[in-house]
Image (cartoon, rainbow, N blue to C red):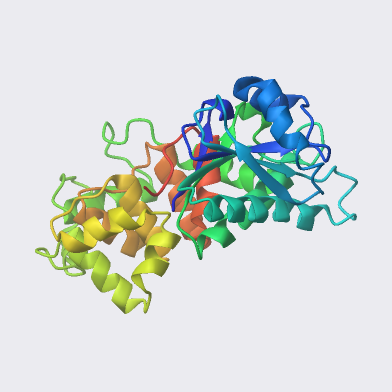
Length: 333
C-alpha cells in the first residue's frame, strides 16, 4: 500500500508493473518510452503494442515486460501541455487511475510510474507532480498496492515555489548544527531539550522541575508505543485501515504493531502515525517519546516535519515530497 518517491532508473525497478509514458500510436519514442523499449526488447515489445492499434490520451493498455525485471508494462498516453485549458489535468489524472486499475486487474502488488507528460510533452513539472500524487493517493484509499514514483534526475523534480521557499526558510532559520555545545539555546531548542528530560533521555540545566513534571504528567510511563497508538486511534474515532493508509504504512506492518504491544517502530514510522492522527506538536512528541525518539533541530527531516505540523498540514505525501527534495528518509513503511 505505501506510496514512495524514489530516485532510480525505471527500467531497473523490480516491481510487478512499470508504466511507460507512451504516444497514441504506441510506437517506440524517446525519453522514458525509448528506454523501456530498449530494455524490454524493441521487436517483441513493438509487436505487442502494434496489436492494439494505438491508445487514446488518458487511456492505458498492458503488455508483458519481456526483458525487464517487471512482469508487465502498462502503456499510458499523457496529454501534451497546451496551457492548461484543454482538459490536460483530467486526462493526466486518468493516466494514473487507468494504469492503476489495470495493475490491480492483473493482480499486481507493486507498480512504478515515471512523472507522466513532464518530459517532451511539456507539462509543468510541479503541476504534473501534484496531479500524480493526488491521483495515486485517491486510488490507494480503496486499494492495496505498492506504488513508486520514479525520478531519474533530481533536477527534474519540481515543487511549488512558494511553499518550497517557506520550507527552506524554516529549515535554515531553525537548524542547529551542534545543539548541546552551548547552554544558550533559542526557545525551540530549549523546548526540545526539556522534552528530552521528560523522556529521561538526557538532562539539561536549562530545564525547570515544574516543566519536567508537566511533561511527565501528560503520559503514562508504562504505556508502550503500540498501546498509546491504539488508544489514540480510538480517541480520534478512526479505524485501523484509515489510520495505516493515512500513515503510508503497509497493512502487514500495522498488524505487527497491533499484535505486539512491545513493538518498537522506526522513527519514520512513528512520525507517520503522528501525521496520520493529525497530532499537534506536543502530542507528536509524546508519541515519539514512547518509541525513544524526539524531533531534533539538527536534522533537516525533523524540521520539515515540524514545519508542516505547525502549519496544520497533515498530507503525508506532500511532506514526503519535501523530504525527498532534501534527500531525507520518507515517512511511512
